[in-house]
Amino acid sequence: MALLSRLQRGLETVYRIATGVDVRDFVIDAEARAAALDDGDHPRRPREQLLIAEDNGEVSLGLFVDPGVVAHLERHDPAQELGDHNVGDFLLAVEGVSHFVYAVYCAQVQREVSALELELQAEVDKYVTCLLTAGDEEARSARWRRRLYENFVFEPDLDPVERDRYRAANANARRFAASLEQRFVTGRRIGDMLHELRRFYRLSLPAKLDHIARAA
Image 1 (cartoon, rainbow, N blue to C red):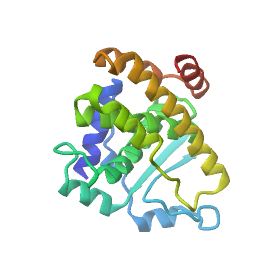
Image 2: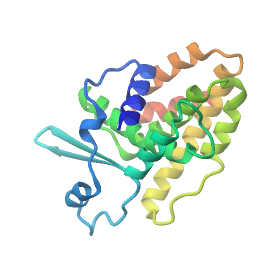
Image 3: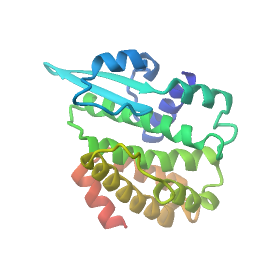
Image 4: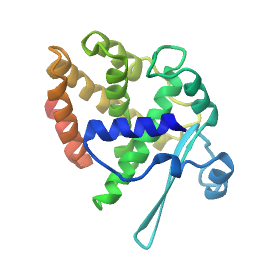
């Protein structure tokens, strides 16, 4: 589970936030997830899933990440090499930790967060994390954009609402990543890109979508 904690620290460093919690304390196993979900309402069991419950203003979180994913990444550390052999599991782990960190951040600033907003931020976080993990940002940016936003397939068991949400998140993240590449990555202005990302992170969903539309 140390890898999940490293991803959390990396995201919090990028965005200059401090949640004050450790994702490892919120990781649940398959049995706990099954107990928390109503099979009639949640037939899907994806390999990564953030559970959020609110009761009298108190927010509870549980993050499920397939143990096989974590084990594989511990054997093939993406910090040492990120390639075809581990990138799929790496992206899934980044998505889960991104969801967790953003949900905690929104709860702490007392802001509601939608499923679309979680997915959009996770799609942006995947690009940023891969870019910064792999190094040589200018040379790799276009390849990561194609891998994340073009060379992918949706899970076949998504319902229409979920599919539309993922499609919208992907399309907007693709436009934003292309804008980041053009404005900052080309020319190696990574410090300026991080400033832009920190500002974007703190925007509401409508403001994020408007920012992307204007920046694209």
